[in-house]
Image (cartoon, rainbow, N blue to C red):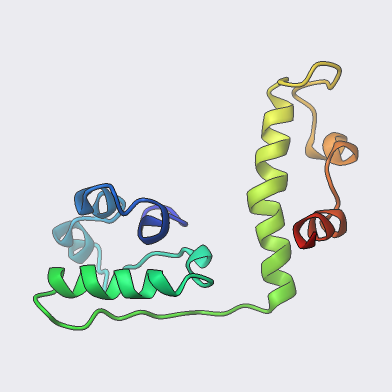
Amino acid sequence: AFEKQIHYFKYHLQKPLGWYYSFFPTPQSFLEHGGLMTGEASPGYLPYPSVVKDVYRIMKQQLDHQLPKIIMVAREPLDRMYSSYRYNYVHPTVEYLQNGHINGILGNQPEEYYQKYLFSLEDFVRAELK
């Protein structure tokens, strides 16, 4: 796919399959560039067994009843947690602050400037576990 974490099978099933396919190169373009395989990277699917059932059901119809291939790649859990914290919390929050959306906090500063306004990973985990 052109971007990560599309999450079609968890959050966008109401949209047409064409919307999902728009995130991937056309077969002709893909093959012209030497591609052999493409896929979606959505780690958020993992905790939801219904996603596997939906992928199977929908893609089996699309593949003329061939079985779809689902490949899961796992990371070391603490590295994955830290990566998710950075991707889903730190980067969007810093971008929001850099754009000057909070009165009293200077915009257009380096990321380090905003660290004092962010939850630490430890605080973030504690809040999630409550």
